[in-house]
Image 1 (cartoon, rainbow, N blue to C red):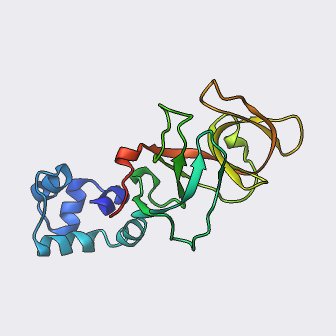
Image 2: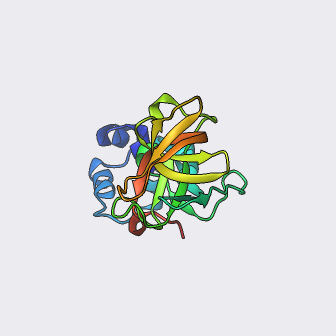
Image 3: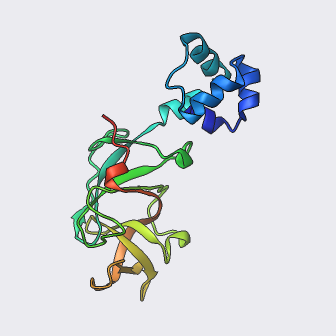
Length: 196
């Protein structure tokens, strides 16, 4: 049903295009029918074919590394594109977007972010875009360490103050950042969508 969500079609339109009854589609969508016949599955797949490849191929995201929620953690992304520590299901609201996932390491941002939580973000290039300012971001400094911090303008070019969500952790001042990217989606470890 992931391709159905990506398509933006209503159930009546999908029924018309596929020849599968509205009631059968409704039961699948609600989860009250755990499966459908092979014939209906093929009909639905054919009706959703223009959305099927992108949503099917993008259903998993590799967790590229770990980022510190306060602790200094080397942000290691030594994996080939598409590989990682493990894979998680892509949040439906991020279908069609090029995103990166990282796992939180450390406990200094509890209860907001905890160890094993997964953060999704998008990063097109190096640098700190204006939309990253005053937001919680995944960021990497010139030393290669990664954090989850609120990014504030610093006292000079390419310098930023990195504030923790935990008020007991002092703000890191005038840090040179390679890049920063605002968080798009946060998933707690218990519901991270880790693929088997």
